[in-house]
Image (cartoon, rainbow, N blue to C red; front, top):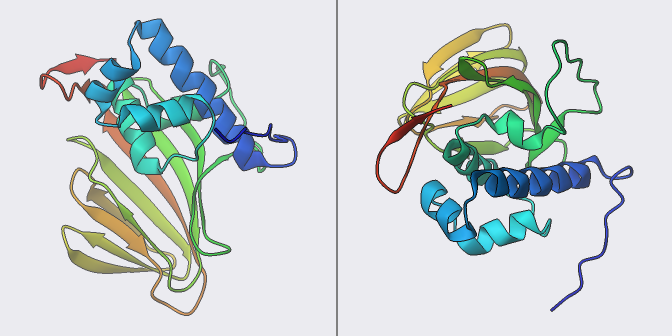
Length: 211
């Protein structure tokens, strides 16, 4: 087995995020009293991938983290946060969790999130020309609001493309296949708010569990 070298979290913010995810997933699973097999059954994520996540040996995709979060009945933001959110929380420009990287210069950053009443997440996305992110369909009732700052966003929902130019905003149902792409020649930058009902689906028996 190849030895995993310790990461310098101060020098690599993404490594700090991965370490936080590992600690939080392991702690949440232990708190629930679930085995890895049980979490795998509830989330639809393989046991092998969960082992990799908990041992801080992989950078899981956003889709994988969303499935794990749904199994716990929490928002994605709760998995990457260091601790309990205070009454007022200010997230500095270097503290946001970078959860997606595409081509050089493309990044998806989860700025802040909340689990009260409904799951809310605030994201900042940057995409270089020619880059794209195909998102999975989220849990029923999920909606997303986007505001394009620079460039033109090509938003695909249910296989239909919609051009969203700079200065425009869009609201859509995100509980169906969708994706974001930059098909222009300029860099694309947009802000996204995702809102989902504060309930989660147990993939084993179809039951809905409240948070």
